[in-house]
Length: 332
Image 1 (cartoon, rainbow, N blue to C red):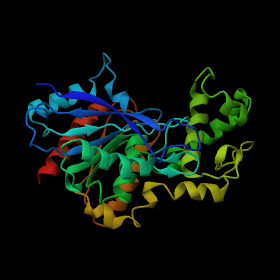
Image 2 (image 1 turned 90 degrees about the vertical axis):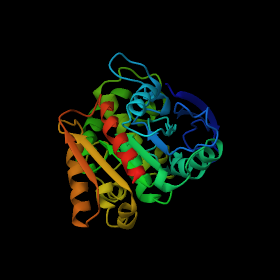
Image 3 (image 1 turned 45 degrees about the vertical axis):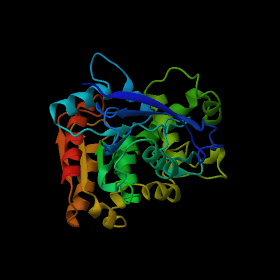
Image 4 (image 1 turned 120 degrees about the horizontal axis):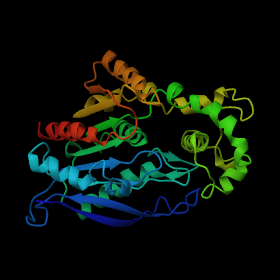
């Protein structure tokens, strides 16, 4: 038996008139398991599945020859008994620069509030969910993995289980290498003002373009500054790539490896904290995961950590592992 996807259209109040002019109307796919319509009394646990950088919830619906859509994956896992039937919600937190990191920022908008204050209660009111933290998980890969971890740390009263696949952490390794690439490439686009004005039409979108836009997106999330051009500050000199310590410190305040101590109680309260990363990750996120897990281990915080032989891209098969772990932890 197959589940079905409902694509909801949700108009957000907190994203209205956001600084980047991104739409308040968001498409939110929701997976309903087989049997949802037949039994009007049964309630289901919920999983919020967060897309990576430059993606939104609808990316999980893509049909490619190399992999399954999320509906097919969930149908297979539920049908085989690997996971329990559950509702899966796929939020849209995309910004003009490619991502919100699922946090609030004066330069992008209140995406954290959108998820926690708007979307979760709206889903619980519209669908037959088990509306408790013990039956509500948050999962993601890359920037989505970062978002899952941040939401679980900052809102453990909402999300009682979390899984981060190759999530952004230890910013010294995953972001800093792109700074010099930014400085080398920005001139090709006519400078920052020209790039921002022509963001949608610039070509080619090569490695230099990706380094520039990714860096700008992270700056818009981690170092908003109403007095700076375009509402955010760069953590380095755009001519020399020299680090600007005052701004870089603001970035580090959002790095999960530096947040374990201040969020120890929330992390300890989770029914499941799952992390993994490929040993060949191009953004060095396997090292960030190791560091983060060491910080957890030092404090005796329970977690599951796996490292596998693969890269950062094309690893949705790892959802089979985390979804099964979440399902087991929900049953405990």
